[in-house]
Image 1 (cartoon, rainbow, N blue to C red):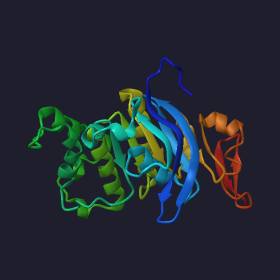
Image 2 (cartoon, rainbow, N blue to C red; image 1 turned 180 degrees about the vertical axis):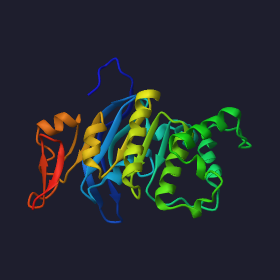
Image 3 (cartoon, one colour; image 1 turned 45 degrees about the horizontal axis):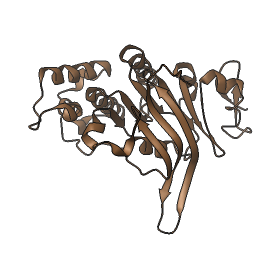
Image 4 (tube, rainbow, N blue to C red; image 1 turned 90 degrees about the vertical axis):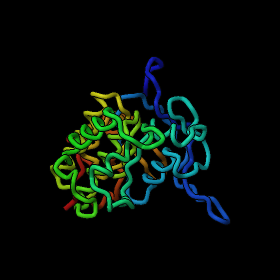
Amino acid sequence: MTSEKEHIILKADGLSIGYFGKKKIDVIAKEISFNFSEGTLISLVGANGIGKSTLLRTLSGMQKRIEGNVFIHNKQLETYHPIELATLLSVVLTEAPTSKNLSVLEFVSLGRQPHTNWMGNLSTTDREKVVWALTQTDTTALKQRSCFELSDGQMQRVAIARALAQDTSIILLDEPTTHLDLYHRANILKLLKRLTQETGKTVLFSTHEIDLAIQLSDQMILMTEKETLIDAPGQLIIKGHFNDLFPSDTIFFDSNTGRFGIKK
């Protein structure tokens, strides 16, 4: 997946994910292993309820792993202090933020917290990062508005702006195109691709936009009920792994176009 000369920035080794119940452990997916280098765009796809959000939460340290290990910059995830980890990894979830009374500018500026001094004062560099993040997500015109005034789609872009302002080497996003219209869905995915190419960031995002993900991703994580597959989009197509992703009586995958269709 990567050559030995490339710097491995995000790694999973024999990872099992799921939930710890009172009486038993509920394993959702197991034996997940991958090595992703810097500057890689990775899409995470699969049917609803397959475990995509659980995997992202486990990789970020928000949810406890069942087995295996996760490594950030070749260091085990659990050994990082939370503040140190926040300078390396940022997360954008689908849940609405709790601080909706803040202005957009204030909310996005919170992304700089891991980098500010103990008083939380923003430096010139911090302010420049915030302006850059607003510009990249097309949210500059919203900066003086309160977050509670925004539409779901606008709030989604603002949440991504906050992650960009955090300026981490790894960004994890859980369905970043949810609530967005066609233009902003394409715009956000193109932005993620550009970030990996121009800044060397490693970006992992879950999505239902599988057709777009196939076109833009360097690597894909394909979660099915039987196994979790990791490979380049072209290889997954050649090996026929998209054919069984959805019930064949309703959805079919055209390997020639790399697109899904509906059986009539």
